[in-house]
Image (cartoon, rainbow, N blue to C red; front, side, top):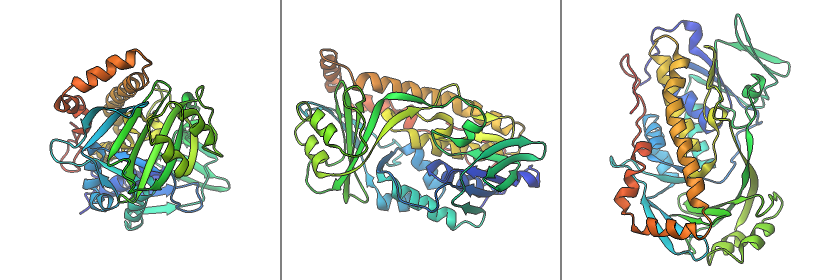
Length: 396
């Protein structure tokens, strides 16, 4: 049942979203559930499966459950009980980090295309959502009558615009925001058929100049591998993985290079992050969600999850009819994003410690009980989305 937005002028119930990725589609579904009419503009000519694997932690899956998407996602993904941390050179197990929430909410590894397909199907089946493909944003401008969005000769005005168009956001650029900064890392992605026994769940290998993460996707039929390597260790190459395999082969744990050589190369992406000072909203008409607001490096596996959380919080702030909803949205989201970014920096340091410091890290990991490791992540995984009922919408 859809909860109607209360105490809002009729014009504010028509909202534009720029970008039909994970954050954009989730935002549309949350807004539609709250009683808004939504039009999504996507620059791609059609919905196409892209990317490789993605991890969805319990905080994100609670939003999926509220939207009625969790069952479909679970059927296409793989449940994970823990993440196994390994030494990058020897493959020796350093720690098992529990990732399932105390309330039983699962942790899933899925193919990004499967996640996108579930969200897209839900959006296409919702009469409050209209999707328009093949629309490349050429101008965004605030006017007295609303926000002008131009897609070449095609122009539209909306009372509220949501930018969900990724790290290299055209909306953010059009507003004059500082561009994302290039990191010293690149992500190399691979897929291969599962069933070879080399990885049974989510596993991560740690080294001073790189780390790798592997997990099953597509209902366990495929194995996803991402190697995040410093660009001064191996230069990015989007045409062939041979350079990466050659750089790793003298150093990597047994079997890891085999996955690279035997797998299908999906691509290599230099990694960027949005400035932490970027505003999440401008005035009361334009708001940013997901990577457009706070695109981050993937060291905490929370980039998509934060965009999913944004969607639920924004819809709640708009739906309750209280003053300054975009200001409240930013006030709610910024402290949490700051804490996640702090965790990202922590993982960057810990994952990539050189010897002999890594030896001390390894000893601490082996001696730390799994319950303590799980407790250190409870603030992240135990987050619950706001309910679209009543006049107050609080997050925990």
